Image (cartoon, rainbow, N blue to C red; front, side, top):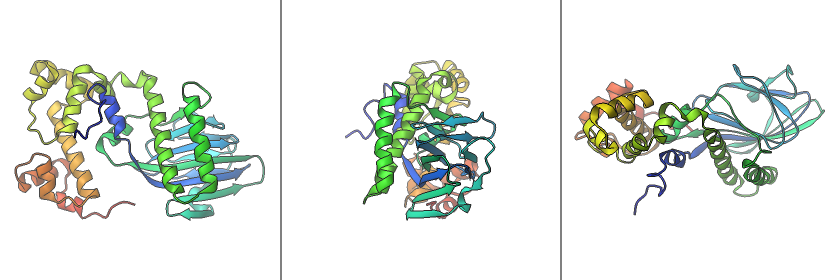
Amino acid sequence: MNPNPPWDTADPLGEALHFLRMSGTFYCRSEVTAPWGVDLPPMPDCLMFHVVTAGRCWLQVPGEPMRQLQPGDLVLVPHGHGHRLLSEPGAPAVGLFDLPREIASERYEVLRHGGGGDAVQMICGAVRFEHPAARHLVQMLPAVIAVDASRPPQAEWMYSTLRFMATEAQQMRPGGEAVMTRLADILVIQAIRAWLEQGSATHTGWLRALQDRQLGRVIVRIHRDPAHPWTLASLAAEAAMSRSAFAARFTQLVGEPAMQYVTRWRMHLAESWLKESATGVAETGARLGYQSEAAFSRAFKRYTGRPPGAVRRQPAVA
């Protein structure tokens, strides 16, 4: 049976979205009353999201214009930058981890804070993406993505998902954390899809290459079969182009030579497998097409600056 999604040959960008599977760092239901402010610290390698379910507030991300959020709005801060949520511009903010919080489960909290004025309810989260394709896609995103739930076509799916999420956050029945995680998956993926559909961000770089009929097919083949003994000639043949034309076009759109991309993709996969599974060094190298553990170890150290055994010995991040 083919493990790959059936649409990805025709839609390489769809394949990239297929890998957007998140692991939650934490989720929080916030019930705050004016005046209030929460200072969220930087969370490297995390995407943070906020959904306003009742009331209005302001989002302040350094280097970005302040924006007001209202019920139904969803905002992503994809690169883990520190930012603030405020009852109004200029309101004093308290550090997130300095506020009293009710621990509902290992990764779910309830935060109540403020001066007793106008109330705001939000659902917030910080998530990680484990697959290298997902991380690569997230790197391409802007500093902030905001989705207005009142605008079609997102109005229907946003409202239905938000209602479900708000109800689940209030009740937290058995299995509630798992449900919240799946709903957050849907919200984040839909927000990224809405951004991609705007089109302006996909005219250059890796995203543009994925949408290119010839290069997109090649990138999918590299992702699916990293162990294949790829050469510039075989990649050009996949694209039905001459080697020189393919090499120039790939470098122009992706920003690096094709064979360098192949190596980087293999090393990203190797690092993920070594960190997150019980796969040994020799097995990892074999899965990526290396003929010996020594050959793989040399390539890995040359690319990352560390031997693969050192990466494998690192404790897993919760």
